[in-house]
Length: 608
Image (cartoon, rainbow, N blue to C red; front, side, top):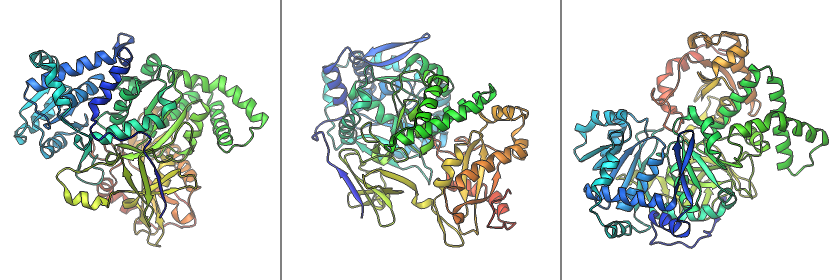
């Protein structure tokens, strides 16, 4: 059994809770700008001391409203400054937040609130309030619904002025490390969401150790980051708490359509993103260059960037011609992309799904080191991450301090350490099934290299076994295909079938530009685009490229382009944009059956 374990760097403090991270930060640097909020065309700083003052004032409001230590409070909101303000105010009041994705349906909201036993809920928008109102009758435990859009946070602050500082100090010190800090529900990609009990020690010990491991990222002069992925997800939640501990200035932009202007004005030093964001940056840049008649230059620049980065990673000498081309493209292409991302980004942390070596090497040559990591809600986000001082593109890095990972006989990744959650809420059967002693069984399949760098190769439950007995990991095919600019999502199928096939959906944002760049009508309806020969040829090209990396028995022989989108609203994607594979397989069973109605020559790849 392969196992890598790294001792904690920072001594554990069993009595510490999350509030101590903010209190310690304020004591160390009260005047440090810890946040920045939009202000006209710019940003207004909020110091550590100012943030704590606002946190305590809101915590008093919660106390005055009858929230007791240990009470569960739901929160439905986008990624804004108010999200972290509410988060820490609930910590200071001794309460337990139950974050809810702002895109959740009324039924999903009802499940999270009822299963958790929440007695109150905070809603950011009128739309969120309306969804809660739909199911309010089914939530007898919920006593209060506070509407941020109606000014209820300000009302809470006003009503809390009679509560003394000593009461908030008492409340914030009640919880110790072993106590529940938050109750986060899984995305539900494989069934009904389960509540993950994350403790104060999960956050405190992981944050303190990660800040040492990621010192070079967090200590860049004037370090800052712009959060735009949902803070209801553990990935952004962990980073927002890490930033407070490390003294990193945090801004927020909930509207991804405004991301580039926000990056330009905020100028962060590092980013937190999922691979789809990096794919969008690359693909939109390529298509923009194509539209301007510079597509050939961009592709040459991209090829040189990847080649240059690979040579550096392998410790090989960069040939003079490559150096010359790299210098030229740096002026013509790379510098413009850096400027579009704010001009100061040095690092980017990527998680949630595999990034792929091509994008990692491309951005590395832009001067942006993407540190890909791996983790789950159950591991308080990161279990492994590439470090500034120890990084390999194409892997998810070495284990973090305080964390151990071992691989089961079947390659399943198992984790133990400071980051592993306590249990599934009110679900002892699921908890027992998820652990082997103190090792959490992730359900992911992985492999270590000799230096302890982990690579995730797929999900245990998603392995396809063809009729010929060949085991196929869908992710190895899906991830490179999804990198194509016109492809939005892809699901590989073929369990107990004679060959591997794929369902494909098109990207509605990128498709019009691609159509225009290829001499076709930009407003071609999706229903017509799926049958267009040029579109099908482009999808085939992406599949052919992916097939190069697998054996013939694993390669995709046929595909179907669906005249629809898979979205969270349609029920086919989770809030973090992961596919709900089982739902898709059920909903599109007819399309899958059609693929296999006509046999194919398994020595050739063909169109359906």
